[in-house]
Length: 195
Image: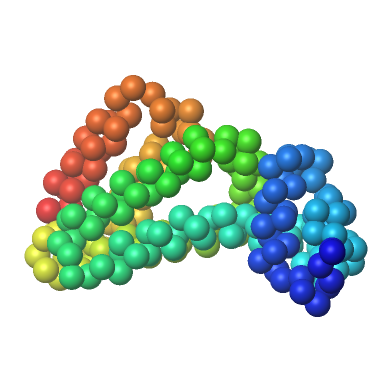
């Protein structure tokens, strides 16, 4: 039996939206398609998300938050050596982005379009990631592992310097031979600079 609007949750709508986007792409996916996939009226979807733009923004945020949450665990592991945490955090970011691009290329392409539409959500995501980096670098500066006068500026620089390994515009390069060695070389250079 089809779910009623009382059992409909924002999370179920977002999961259905992701499937509709995967099937139809961002240009053709509609709120009616999402409602149909859930077996409810489009009005039921609009009770949770006031506009199609709000729904697209929420599904984009959900997608980006998956990466942020995994990385937050690494950033929060304050008992570990800051250099090892920084290396692990950067490697996890690169790996998460590679998996998103390689495991489901159609959905990755869809989200690339959606992130272009939702600059504020992307800005919040980047701010969250650089805050995590700042936490690691601040702890490294406090322990003497890193010698940086401004951990927040250093975190922004590290994030920008590693862009080739997490910015979706470089996704085609993430499977090239030697990209892993190039990533390691960049991280080694950055760590030496932070010391």
